Amino acid sequence: MFEIKKKIVISDMDGTLLRSDKTISQKTIETVNEFRKNNIDFTIATGRIYPVVLETVKTMNIKKPLILCNGALLQDPITEEVYFSKLLEDDIVHKILKTADESGCYFYYYTKDSICAKDLKYTAKYYYEMNKTIKQEKKINIYLSPNLVNERKSNIYKVVVLEENVEKLKQVKQEMKKYDAYIDIVSSYWNNIEIVAKGVSKGAGVKFFAEKFDYEIENIMCIGDEENDESMLKVAGFPVAMGNASENMKKIAKYITSSNDNEGMSEAILKFAEL
Image (cartoon, rainbow, N blue to C red):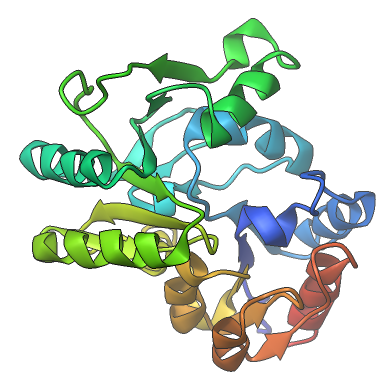
């Protein structure tokens, strides 16, 4: 008997699912809903935490578990059950934050449901502005402390260091390599580094997802644009790079779609459906 393949699209958010203005195109929403009827489901793999993605989950009608914090968390969008979780070790976090602080770079970190920063800049400010437009129960927890190194919270999943001076950022990244046995470092944009526990990546998250929820790797499409998406493109059966992706990502991909501002997501899903 002919068996219908169970497929899924696992998508990055920024620069991929989201357009440059941080919105999702109506065509993308319609394409995902249409192909869901044909056994091609959809979820996200992002560097963000659960409260931050709730609006996207609602817009895209996502029912499948979410790969969060670059793979440090796998969480159900409906029940909030956590299927996988890997924290940074607390003593290593202290050293990482101290290194970032001494460098003069801006930094922040994520717990399961909060963003913690020194002051209201960059991502913290973005979430603060976002909070003004969403319901109380969906607001993002923002913890601010000028002494973030010593007054840090426990249970930290990811540390982000931001720096406009590229050479300075490279230097900080080099400094962090002394903790190589405990951490992995990737980047989601030219001006940042993202630090997670050793072995954590979107790719490892996709592998765990496939095993846990009974998907053949060959029936998984992963799509992204930046370095922190590289690991999941390498494990996917159908790896797709956005038209706006880095050259490195395009080399890994089996298919290069249009940009995030030119319906690249819809185009890629249509291609995946043909396989």
